[in-house]
Image 1 (cartoon, one colour):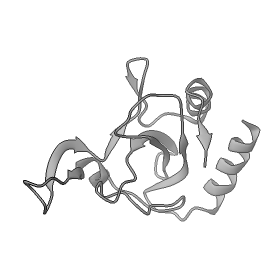
Image 2 (cartoon, rainbow, N blue to C red):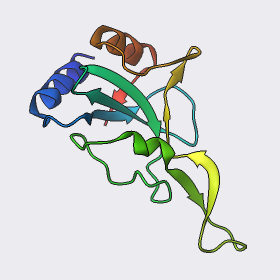
Image 3 (tube, rainbow, N blue to C red):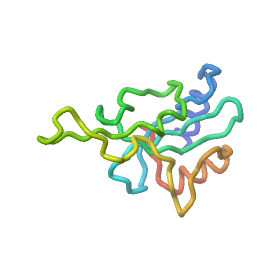
Image 4 (tube, helix red, strand yellow):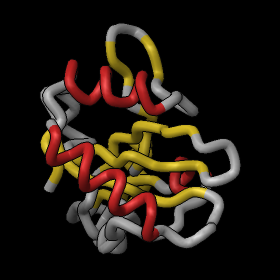
Length: 128
């Protein structure tokens, strides 16, 4: 856990002053087959963190993002695209490519650093 803390602090200090920036990517024990990857996003204006579950498939629109990349709320509107013989050009599956992490009935959006660390420990977060 100390490693994650050090890496988070290092990345946050290097991040540009954009609005919302990915400061960490990893996986956790929260089961969500459509969204296996967890992002920690820092809002530089409020200095609060948001936990987001995403899919990194090229069919989901969020493939290729890295730590330090700026994101907007538009990521929550991107669908996961499905393909079949009937729709070879693709179709909207109705599943969003990014959703807020839900744990114990709560969404973790705009939380402080102490809450972030408690939640990351509770969900067994492992940074890539």
